[in-house]
Amino acid sequence: MQIGIIGLSLSGKSTLFSAMTGSHALAHPAQSGKGQFQVATIKVPDPRLEPLAQMFHPEKVTPASIEYLDFPGPPSGTKHPLLLVPQAREVDALALVVRAFEDDRVVHPLGGINVVRDLNYVETETILADLQIIENRLERVKKEGMKGEQLLQLEADLLSHCQSALQEGTPLRLLEFSEEDRKRLRGFQLLTLKPVLVIVNLGEQDLGGEAFSHLLAQATLREKQGICRVTGVCGKLEAEIGELPEEERGAFLRAMGIERPALEKVITLSYELLGLISFFTVGKDEVKAWTIPAGTPAMKAAAVIHSDMERGFIRAEVIPWEDLVRTGSMAAARDLGHLRIEGKGYVIQDGEVMHVRFHL
Image (cartoon, rainbow, N blue to C red):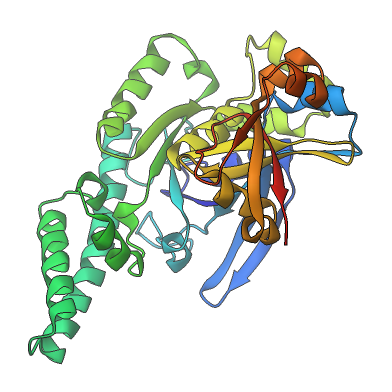
């Protein structure tokens, strides 16, 4: 799963990306035919892994991971404060960084701190970008001529519906589409259909208190707009945390009165936004977290581990991780009746440990 980080120039999005990199992974430049950007594969913090590892003493422990892409900002000297690169259309969700920190040395490109204005600006730009794609396609469809082509007519009707909504300033994530319509729209990679995580980049003085609550309340209005989550982060502080050695971070957080790095919350919200859950496989070789969409049946979840497991699926042995930890071993869980036998249609739940029985 990939999340693309966008934001107005001087919003601090690259600082946040660097902070996430320092805390959880190493970033590297990536190149596509459409330009260069930074990629970081982030380990997803999951406290459930530790007690499972203590049980099995595996050779390695592998958390789930998620990729964040830091797209370049507009070239220096340009008046436009937002650059929507083509790669932004290819990610699963967008993380929109909105500046809320004051800094006299860094002039805001729109003339001052205003969270709602910045959100509206970015939303308008994504709407206009999608509208151009929709209108270009509609024009081509008309040139091709319908001539009784039912599929083309269905596409034209769907695109006209999207065009009307965008012209009224409505992002497409607020509309309801059938599964068939979503499949038709998938190839257009529309920005306003993507889930959005709004990250309000705060100053240290704004953490907690009225200023913090007010800024988040302004941004949280977006949570009412479909697939969206909102959180507040102090990028500067998170970058300092990320630069500390692992053994010193706990003491620093306690001194600052912080329970955990805010960027861990960003990762958790990213999972929620995309409707993802984790299940575990355990053993002496490895304890590992696997990522699947919520609602995934056992046979499809097995395919995430290995395609052979899906092809030869017989059954899955499933147990909630806390029940496994409480009973002390797979054998004890089986004897006590906590280890359930489930078929291919069983929907895997977040935090379950699964052992797949298969035969080829």
